Length: 308
Image (cartoon, rainbow, N blue to C red; front, side, top):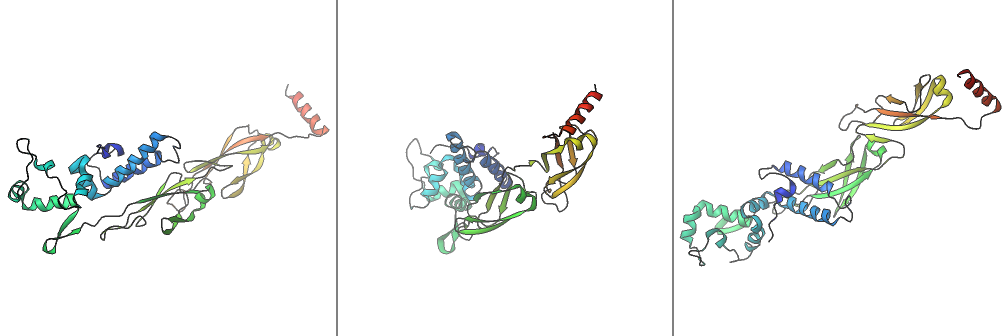
């Protein structure tokens, strides 16, 4: 078996906690997800390695075996399922370059009585059960991943989704202000645990679809809005569309094209809060009049001559 350094693949140290492993996995899985790297074979292989590494290091039992046996951990796991299938020579070594079968006395002398139980527990994932029987170790089920896309309006107001994950229909609630790329964890909605272990979790990556009018910058919104020439020159009010509805905004006299207006509190809700909002930044686009009457044309001529 070709050795793969799962810690290096996820970019974490060998003493990394489960939370650190999960964070590293989510970041890399999002970066190399096939939906983002379509046609990139290198990225596809990287994504497979990332998932393989997470599958081992996120499982305490498998991680313990991997830390102890390295590249051969899977062979020992499979060997433990068959009588006589385990090769102790990896641990005991030959004597004088010859094969050697270790006696019970030699084994006990090397590992101790307590060590014997620990090794079987590590290798086979089993514990002693009454009268020499063994019972399998409880382990957590595999985590599931999913992705769903919201409109900007749904992200603003909050939304719900019914997701079909394997044989489960799961209702997921998204709070107002949720951001693109955010990952939601739904506890216990992954694969079933084995031997009484807890179920895995479901991790849902949120995508926010582009909007025709607004662009999001963190909790702020930006947009362009037309303002009539007469209003820009003389001052007045302009009706501006926001996510909360249409508002009247004061336009100061001689407002120039491209000026940015800041509308406080009319941006996106701050996720996880009840009354905090970002701002909205509106770029003024002066709208020139068309189909001028003769009188309007004459007035513009007079104005032009006065400014010379």
